[in-house]
Image 1 (cartoon, rainbow, N blue to C red):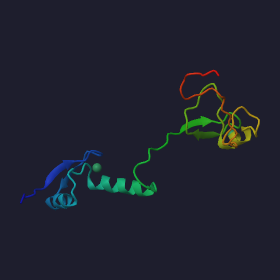
Image 2 (image 1 turned 135 degrees about the vertical axis):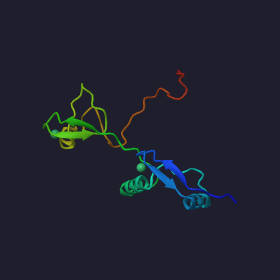
Image 3 (image 1 turned 45 degrees about the vertical axis):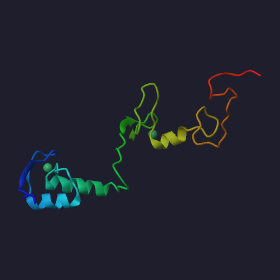
Image 4 (image 1 turned 135 degrees about the horizontal axis):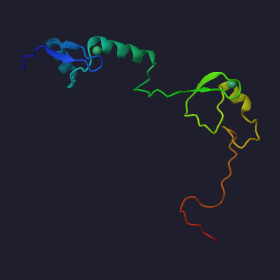
Length: 130
Ligand SMILES: [Zn+2]
Ligand SMILES: [Zn+2]
């Protein structure tokens, strides 16, 4: 049986040295973990707390990046989940809803399944003429 010894590891988050004790190593081995802990106990606790807050269903959800913008309509500061383009006005959610064409706009969002497929076959890339 291998005699475990306390190890001193360096936290990859905060750089603090911490002790990976023999008993912890044993515990890890029992769990089948082959990796040494990369973080000190406090950083581990912090991460755990963070994860709990995120309502984690499973795995990590990459946080969606939000871009701060100013509403072109009312001047309110807001954030949008896409990179605003300089050639397009950006609206806050209120104004965006107001701006959204009721039904006749060029852009339709989630409308009825009223899409038309033009007859040219998009499958083969070859156009057949009958
Ligand atoms: Zn740390
Ligand atoms: Zn607005």
